[in-house]
Image (cartoon, rainbow, N blue to C red; front, side, top):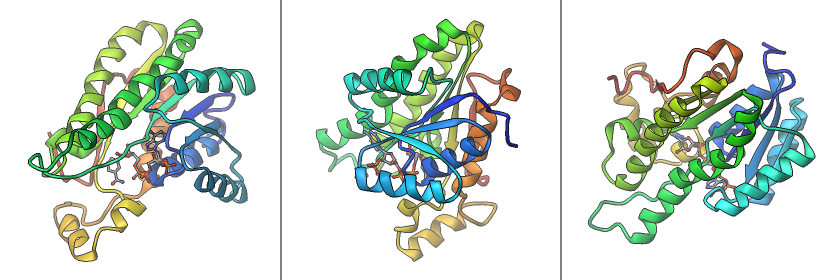
Amino acid sequence: MSGILDGKIALITGGTGGIGKATCKRLTKMGAQVVSTYLGESKALEMREQMKEQGCNIAIYPCDVSDFDQCQALAESIQNDIGPVDIVVNNAGITRDTTMKKMTAEQWQAVINNNLNSVFNVTRAFIESMLERQTGRVVNISSINGQKGQFGQANYSAAKAGIHGFTMALAQEVARKGITVNTVSPGYIATEMVMAVPEEVRNQIIAQIPVGRLGKPEEIAALVGFLASEDAAFITGANFAANGGQHMH
Ligand code: NDP
């Protein structure tokens, strides 16, 4: 596996979270220089140390991806410090679950800003350099709940469904320039977020998954790694479900 991404620079937003960390590790093992954004500094420093112990050298940059100007500044800093970014993985995301009757404007806006506007902010900051160099990979992390909807997640489902619309439109714009844009839609993955759900509820979720278990962050990371590689050059505008068979269409 080593060497496939040699010489490439990969940016993973929210690389300090469950799926993000596994993706940072995977892309590093494939040879890329990986850069992760972070919000919480102590968590990011701890993650960088942990990764170092595992032989992965990750660069970390503070950036609130819901803020357009911070994303522009991030692109400039990475370009100056490390070089042009070849691979962007839009992975940062949040949830603010509640039924429509109770949802506040703040809960709606926070989820749209952090999960969907962030994809525009980050991609916009890096796409021009990719177009100039006629090479690039954009991988957007959506969710099974963007594909099927989910009770109590009108904000999250809307943002995640919006991500794939973005993917399909941008894929068409940049296809001739050697850039691919794809969506990965994970099902329930055993990250801290899902493991924090009471065991009884978690078991109810697992009962709905045909393969009979939660997904592993590494299984999402492996798919992202493939999409980031040269082997995936003919795949663009696609939405990959990785959900253990929980939702098929
Ligand atoms: P985590 O909560 O573990 O990680 C989310 C990451 O996003 C954190 O590193 C967080 O940083 C970062 N983040 C959130 N908001 C911002 C922001 N405004 N600017 C910069 N960074 C931000 O989540 P997961 O690893 O579980 O999820 C990763 C992605 O996968 C998300 O988009 C999620 O919606 C999606 N997903 C997850 C599933 C699951 O089962 N876990 C299922 C389907 C999709 P910090 O900690 O510093 O705040």
